[in-house]
Image 1 (cartoon, helix red, strand yellow):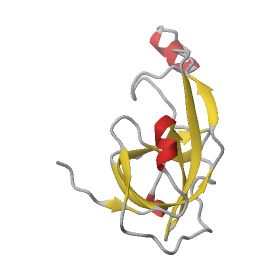
Image 2 (image 1 turned 135 degrees about the vertical axis):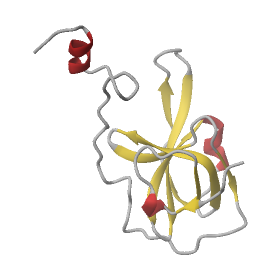
Image 3 (image 1 turned 180 degrees about the horizontal axis):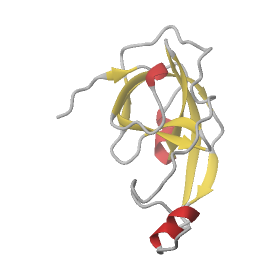
Image 4 (image 1 turned 180 degrees about the vertical axis):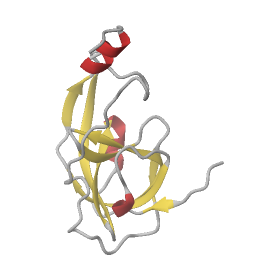
Length: 146
């Protein structure tokens, strides 16, 4: 069993995994319908603004998880990850993540440090980090010399 070291929002960065975090729901966004490009399945998604005493981050809530969140309540997020969505950090449950309401409450939230506002570049994929699909990678792997 892994250690449950809870992180603060200010310490989140792109592409973290296996995170434990306590955060308060500040704001619920609009529900949107999205279609999975591969399967054609319809899903609901909502951007939820979470906060703690160190800052704010957006969380992408999907389907039945949307109705489990309430403004002003504090939740414990377990084994979650950060993703980059259009260059901005988002908290995501992924496959193994979960959350539940906690008795503990977060009273003060730092509203001046939204880490989802900062834009990040996507890491370059190449043949050394799980087989990239960029133009240069195809040229190199085909034996083309330049």
